[in-house]
Length: 270
Length: 294
Image (cartoon, rainbow over all chains, first blue to last red):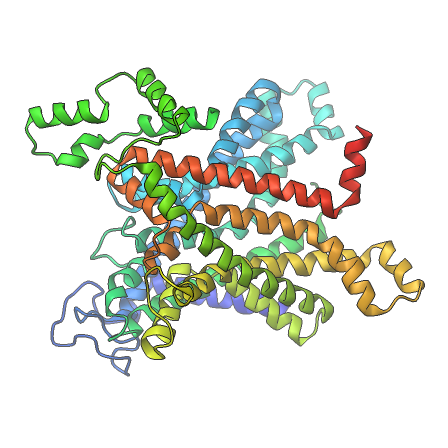
């Protein structure tokens, strides 16, 4: 399966670069309305066709990728940081702190996650940060639970006992000894979760709760063109393909990372 | 009870005034006062909560701030639709997922396995709202075989059920494959082979039965989450279930509706989990023995 992993990384790099360098690739403005070229089907000039306001879908998909991918990444890093902090504290100190924190984590996990994200994005004014907050609010809990479990098993190992016996403070043990040992696991989990965050982001913007128009995201391109599905199906096909392809690459890479870690775990420090 | 208290507290703690979103920013103060009295948000938190519990004990869920309709009645109307859709999706997802997973485990490492793995990764990577629209375009607008949206006879459920089942089928296939590969490595399969059992018997009696346990956990979780409403699928296909009902409630800050849906949804989730535990009990003698040993 190594070839597949390479293909996934390759496609992902192409998608990310294409979004970053969107202005160099396409000459069309993603938000400029051009009423002379409404709902043109895909051709050599408009690669993915145009929508009901004459905007070029190809450039909208490219620019949309900027928002969709960066939101997924930022939310993943926020979730990871919060989850790491909470999981380390809860796992290391145990007892009452652990009990209270884990009760809260279970509470968050017991909510239907998309509905929780919808609820949070309704409260705050819509924009990039609201979406990030909504995804993070749902996402940190599973990181916290994973890290806590890992810390519980690390804590019993001789090197932690050794650190304690030479008089290391709690903070030093957590930051210098536990944290580095949690990082490989966290990054694997991050890889497995990124695809899900991208799907949540696109679902929120599909429901009109994400980044607001006219700026495109992959979800909002689909949602805005929903009503034209019978007369201009290409308007929703390509944005959806972009989501599927990106999420698939994230998932394949995440799986590969996980398999690698399983394979390598006897030898490494964990 | 504790779920009731916590969700109630959380919902009330959220910023955003239901009265303001009901009448708009420009309403005169008297109207606001009148409506506050009507929905009871002028009282303090504890008496609001006790009032709600009182309603629950009477078997009611209060009235919607907007439509003044009885929330319990609305949920009773919509919940069967949600159950129907969840059930339909599972009827499709379970056999397909298990079959795909098992066949790819049997042909491990060969072409079919690779193809199936890619299909399964594709399945969990699909945005349901997009694949739903694509299916709708192809089957109802292009081929005109099925109605595009609405609730009604059996033809209406096919597309939403397929849409909802795809990610579930894919994750079932992935779990089925890894579980089966794990089981094949176990010593009891070697024993069965050494005894000279036929491959078919080994597959059905030994492998399938053992693989069912992790699969049932996954199926139970999926089913439970669908009972909380498949917001996206219900939105696209105009399916009148509690997912859409609850989302509209959230957006309009219609708290009785949100509370009611959450309570019904979480209760259903808990019930499903109990049912799953009972199925374990039936399927796995080890669980029974452990319990009687206690």
